[in-house]
Image (cartoon, rainbow, N blue to C red; front, side, top):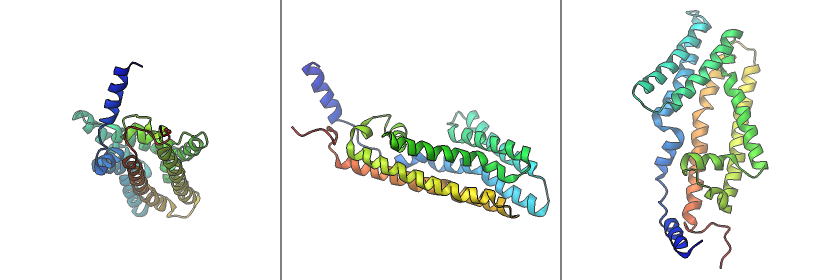
Amino acid sequence: MQPGNETAAETSTDEEEPLPPFSVQMAQQLGGVRGLVESSIPITLFIVVNFLGDHFHWWSLRTSLIVAVGAALSMAVYRLARKEPTRHALNGVFGIAIGAYIAWKSGDAKDVYLPGMLLTVGYVLGMLVSVVIGRPLVGWLWSVTLDGGATRWYDNQRLRRAFVWLTVLWAVVYALKLGVQVALYRDSSADSDDLLGIARLALGWPPYALLAALTVWQARRILRDEPAHAPADEPAS
């Protein structure tokens, strides 16, 4: 590398832009209040409508499924019409549509939650495997969503170690969530589908928001403590 290039690289690194405020990073991670609300509307509608139909015999399971899928589609179409980001809306359509199809075929309202449970199994296995191979998944996700795809999380020993235990923590929390949902899914009591729906909401965004907040806070704390121009594992001259 030529001296002029080295000087330019050092200047570019030294003038690295500061981290965005904590609130901004959390909004990016969670999709904002609107993203949280929109992603929860279809499944919440299903829980409420199915409860009313099941306990008061006002309508069938199919009606509850149609209402939930219709709500997800309506939000996606509305965002498309306004040329707004559709990630959360389309995620809601995809998730509720698959669950609705399975529940419609089986006639069991609890099956609407089955795709989410299977997805959680994938999350847990993926996070544990990523720790074993030394590429903690939470670090990679933080880089992609909040750090512009930078690799400094892996080059920095403190940051990499933090993402190892954070990934394990995420995996444990998701495994506990899955355990509760599986227990309710296997329960044959009359109210088990309603309890599973409530658990699906209570164990959805709240734990995720807390884990995301802890992850962002820990990463920002380490980066604030480290010199911006040298990785933590670079030997001192």
